Length: 119
Image 1: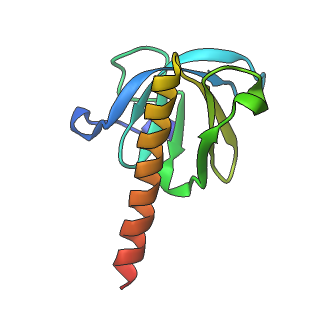
Image 2 (image 1 turned 135 degrees about the vertical axis):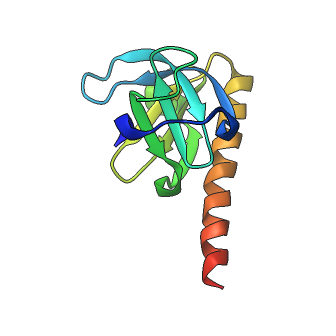
């Protein structure tokens, strides 16, 4: 799925470096994250906008919350999707709060838009 995603610069809501835990080996890797209304994507390099290493579909996510206790790492947070929990670490507490707030707003916006479509 993620190899087919191409992000348009106009769709970017937030972008920046985060450290994420890899899916299988559970290693921590620094990745460039790009948030759009539909996805949160990770890339190996800043400026890449196609073929992300990971793509989280925001409308499928249930939670974004602090994960410092879960990981034992400062400025850690998690994004829960049906398939997996994504653990991420920001460079500062301010960046952590900014990412969590922005992701949370996109998750809420998707839910509100979906509910309004049925009215």
